[in-house]
Image (cartoon, rainbow, N blue to C red; front, side, top):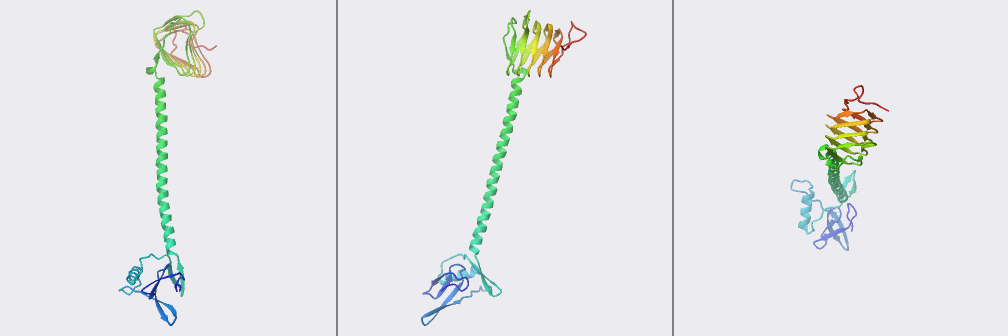
Length: 261
């Protein structure tokens, strides 16, 4: 025998006196006439006269059926029984809700992780910028040794300083700065055909002292820069491209402190 509502298999209790559908949990009484058995739907109503699935389930347990949750429901539509797979629908809904919740959790975790990586990258960039600025500041310059008898060269990312050096060269250039060199000359007295030649991104700063260039007191090319701060400057300066020379107030050439060849 099969369920009269959904056609699923049956389970029996009380010596096959009662039957219950294994899918929609509909209850039936089993009647015997001769050698034949037939089913009669058993309509269970709560004390208030309404059909209550919870009350029906309790009644089924009193008959001897084990607790079970229906996987199908039978809905009467226009006199026709329609089998609805409520168990599967409920399972699908539960899985979708669970997947949605897990999607939110995983998405939130990924966003937090990306935000952390982004914040770390910004912090590292700012730290690197601060370290670079600190490394190139005059306060962090390392003292360099120069006897003034030959050309002093500064290149790469050097950040150096020389103090109280007296140099007199008969030929050539006294100081050559290139690359990203940062050089500070404090209270130095330098005489040479060309006192300082700053190229690339080099920055040379004179503080106090004096410079005397028979050809040029300073030559600045590319992005090179020469600054004179309280320095007595003799000899014209020369610039090209984005080169700059500042503070070259000369005593020996009042007509022009900067000339271009």
